[in-house]
Amino acid sequence: MAQLIHVDPEKCNLSLTCIRVCPAKAIKIVEKHAEIIPSRCIGCGNCVTMCAQDAIEVRDEKVRVKNLLEGETPVAAVCDPAISSEFVDITDYRKFVGMLRALGFSYVMEGAFGIDLVSFKYRELLYNFQGKYYITTKCPPVTSYVEKNHPELVDNLAPIVPPYVAMSKVTRRLYGEGTRVVYLTACVAAKDDARKFKGDGKTDGVLTFQELRKMFAEKHITENSVEYSDFDPPIGRKGGLFPINRGMLQAVDINQDLLSASIIVTEGRSNFLQSLQEFKTEIGLQQHLDLFYCEGCIMGPGNSPGGKKFNRRSQVIKYVKKRLKDFDYEKWQQQIESFSDLDLSQSFKEQDQRLPYPEESEIQRVLHEMGKSKVEDQLGCGACGYPSCREFAVAYCQGLTNYEMCYTYTIHKLHTFIGKLNATNEKLKKTKEALKQSEEKAREEEKLARQAAETTTAMLNKIRAGVVIVDEDLKIIESNNSFVNMLGEDAEHINEMIPGLKGAELSSLVPFPKLFATVLNSGQDVLNRDTSVGDSILNVSVFTIEKNKIVGGIIRDLTAPEVRREEVVTRAREVIRENLETVQQIAFLLGESASKTEKILTSIIEAQKLGTRDDEGIGGK
Image (cartoon, rainbow, N blue to C red; front, side, top):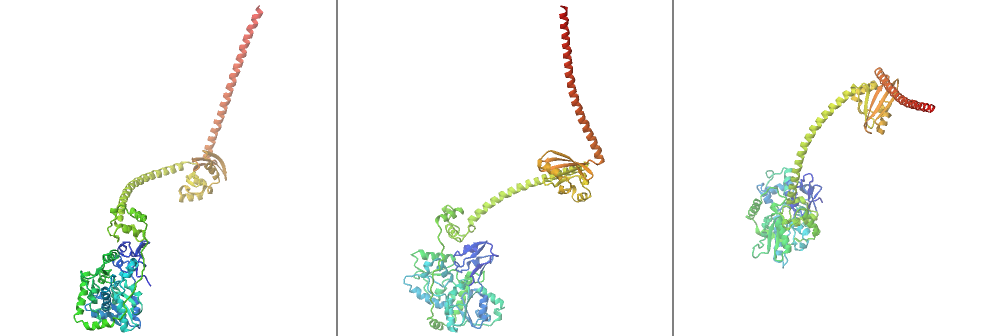
């Protein structure tokens, strides 16, 4: 069986409205969209009516019902009394019945009679309750909620079938066990609730009023296209008041006096939840509960959207009044007695879906992270769907909520984010200004670099020797025209497309790349070599520009006339310089030798003079 209520992930915009209004907390966020938890869902349809994006849909049973109508077995329509508030656009109820027959229904039954039957069972139960207080079970979401969230109250559920089941039993007794029954209603939960009943109480299909309108439109059936037709008997009495508050009790005149009655009647999500909680905890309550989850069936999720509650209520009352004007009371009593032996009892079972209660430390951790550590901050605004921040924190620990569902948390985070965003915007503004200045500076530097490059290229091209500059991979960074011309026509053609042969492999152009590799690896300042290339002798001087990264080379063709003359002069000058240095050294050495000889000779002469003087003195004596 397909899931009763499901979410279209493509339409969901994570407004979280559905989570806030779900009484059973049967919706969670999965992969950036809401998702229904089927085991917890009670089918109230609150999420369907509240979703502004129409992202939540109810299981459609139009195809199922069409298949029934196209079969050979007769099909009976059981009409919920809420038709009087929904189909106000149809001028006469007999036209509405005629439209149903035009769809293919063999019988059209008024559900009000089933309500009359069930109401007598309630009167009997409530007037003879013997101290045990009951919760009415006419509303499927109520019974489902009690079974799943208050299993300890299952024994307090009135053991009586919903009115539409009673009407299914009546229909089959009148028209045969094989008759198929389709329930037309404003209640979404009835689609799943009906599957619980078998035998003569079985309902073969459930159509919401919205689905019924679509089927009319598909078949182009309007009140102008059909004749008058009346409901098949039996006809209900005050059961037509069922869709509004206290309607079922008034059907059989159950006492509702505030002083003497023992029944609390309420409707709507908040009252429904609060009444069950107090019924369970307040010993002094001591009253039965007659509950509608919706604000009466007139506001059920299967109705067309946009209806006004009090106008719909008024339409129900007007319809019942009109039907009672010529009502055959005696015939009605006879029919009630003839079906009084129908088994209208049912039983319930616990389907406990309550989640484990988290540790106190976990609850406090969540409250702290939400910025609600103080007790005064935990009262709650109710916007998240929970009565207090503490209960929200419990649900968070149970995996049913997220922090974004809390308005105060979200607003605080939003303000924090706005503050950070403003600071970021201010930084961005300053960054933009700095970037603008940097761009202007970069453009200026680029312009200067381009001018420098152009100047460098022009200067290199003025040099008659070949000049080439390479990187550590021996790829050319820059070269001049003289270098290109040395390489021949192929290099000149390449130079026309790639000026300066930038990016070319040096090893593919010259036979002496090892000279450049040696300087790159060694990091030495200059390496000068003469090398023979064909008929030419090249002088290659390789020098370091950036150690181990960039080197440059100057290549001269020594066989070229202008270079040869220059080289002869240069080398002659070098020879003359070297000869001069040799002569200077010889002269220096000769100078030192003459000086020493002079000194020796002088000393000999001086010695000779001294000896002569001595000889003269001796002879004279």
